[in-house]
Length: 302
Image (cartoon, rainbow, N blue to C red; front, side, top):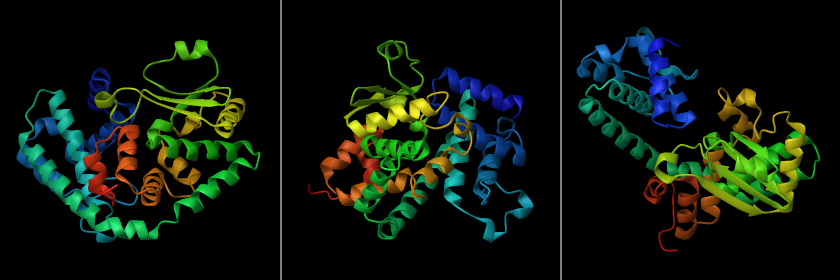
């Protein structure tokens, strides 16, 4: 990446953005710069025009101008626009430059995404397996006694009990009180003590708004699985370090029977469809109840 991206990442780090947010902002800004140049040197009307043309391909990159009419390559159009907009707006702010026109465009894109999400709610719900089928599949992983299956088991259990995102699973397992007392407050940890697991999230998407999240579970199988992963991973990490910066989503996708963390939450909400459960997820995940209600079918009367 260019010096512009390196400097931008440094500013975001100083402002204590999460690692995942920094990675995403840098990724989309870099793609924009590769295609259209430095937005700091462009009028907002030109940036606006460029972003309106943006499409995301199956390879996850913004296509070149001459490829923009290839409709078969288009995937998640509004997501690409939204991510690029957020990245460019953050970049302009880091330079002390105005971005009011782009903020308006971002609001328009968010409306498009909300409308699309509403249309997809029922379709997505119907295509997913029952939550209890998934629950049984997860429990069978523990019975295999295979270290990688045990790792898979722990990943799925943490996703269910904490309602966390993929990036939150970038966590190190610790077993002593001394490690707990001296942990890095910018990293995530899984502290295992007897039959209790404490999932400590210092680095997640909305940490600036909600602060550190701690999920404590008394569960012998989860505690044993954490010890097994600790023993078999040389760095005691829940997810192998080689996947932290790249292919994290793919790793979690495969570990969750190709469902992914979002679909697991959908299945959970469909099975335990109460407002109380939605509030619990809102608190665990570090997101507003209103945001959940926008994207999921939640029973408002329970």
